[in-house]
Image 1 (tube, one colour):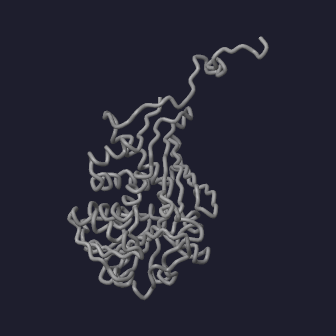
Image 2 (tube, helix red, strand yellow):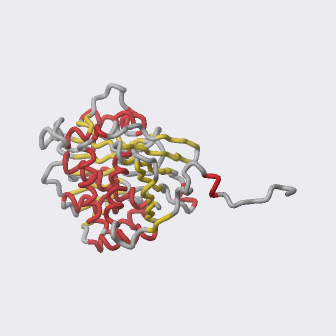
Image 3 (cartoon, rainbow, N blue to C red):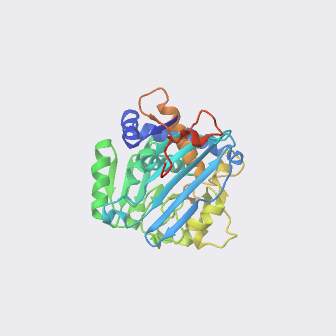
Length: 343
């Protein structure tokens, strides 16, 4: 039998444990897996692009456990009454190939994205960072805010979005949670005086939501919106004036801000910073950029985390997902007997 966490149980788990606590604790799982990065199979996600959006599979394995996530990205969905991103994920036993755990990952991906962002910022941002600007106030914004407060203690936010309703949503959701939210008049206004800048916009276009002139010495940029071919957020000159950190270069060069740069543009893999194999921030005045597109190992970590968290609770079901005949060689034995036509 396969354990299954559906949407209802995922929501109950988050409500019980608290999103901020979950994100903070999930960082430990993700960091632990990044520190053993070379044990994993690594491949760019398998994508199917259409004029409507993209559907992707994100697989990985550490030779004991295999995982994949199914995820879509359809920027025009909200205007049609659908979410931009939906997802589910699976863990399987490498030794027999049987799926052991299945979970919704629309909500879980939002949590793991925030956890990955906060993990990277803890390693790269100035330790005294206290103000975060958020350009883009969509579905990920509140999770990012909770993650940065839970991991870095940041509760002062400067928010900008082209959609006033999205900004109002963020203010409505975060102010009661104790955040000090400043509504900016532009992206440039939002980043003024910020220590950390998170860009997370949805338009599938090569946009420049942040110009190089707005970037101040010492900033850490958490660029998470450029996550598919043809979609970017940053002025490419920003990448030239800072140190760029990525998850998996072969994927980031296809999907991230690196699309705008030469193939030999120098970057540092984040796992090497976390293990101490490579330096992170070089000085208080350095500009650091985390060009994050989301990678399968993060989903592997998130699935492990929720699997362990709900163990021993009533927050999962079991489903009969794999046909199991008494004789493993007699699958046809499961088929009810029948009478041939004309019999």
